Amino acid sequence: MTLPGDLEEADRVERMIRVDHAGEYGARRIYQGQLAVLGRGPKGDILRHMQAQEQVHLDTFSELIGRRRVRPTALLPFWHVAGFALGAVTAAMGTRAAMACTVAVEEAIDEHYRAQSGTLGDDEAELRDTIEKFRAEELEHRDIGLEHEAELAPGYRAMSAAIKFGCKVAIAISERV
Image 1 (spheres, rainbow, N blue to C red):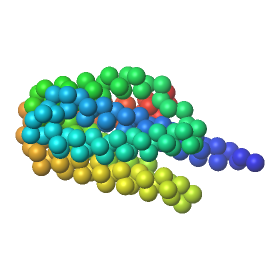
Image 2 (cartoon, helix red, strand yellow):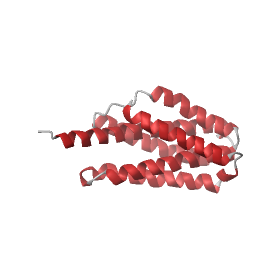
Image 3 (cartoon, helix red, strand yellow):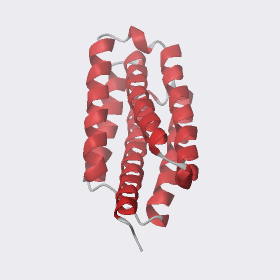
Image 4 (tube, one colour):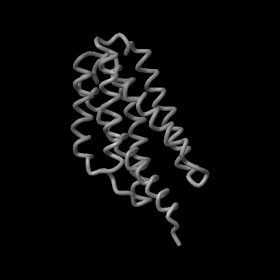
């Protein structure tokens, strides 16, 4: 027998998996956009390293989508274009702007993953551990961006605020749609 509280919990976890899958999909597309512009330059290997980690994150959430029968967001085609565009545009602005994009996205994702992890109990320990592992890697990406002069990008504060706001909107929409 499913109790009302169980249904709410199941819905909450489904939303987490849906939005995390969408976010990792978008992150991979951001790096693909950055690599399209900067891939042959001195930051190419760093971007490929971060993209490879995002691919593992995406593969994990894709597997969870299938195993738990969670409906993915209907917005994946939009995130496909928007993620690549964000990556390519910031990369075209220069390596510092690309790194500023990385820092802003990863700070938004850190906040998001931290909030999710804090709501998961022992019955979802595996999902919580996965989120915490990925959160640590997202913070590594943030640190890489900071080490590569993200904060020296022209208009860093405004760009960072705009990207973080966009991430928060994307999270809110992707949980439900």
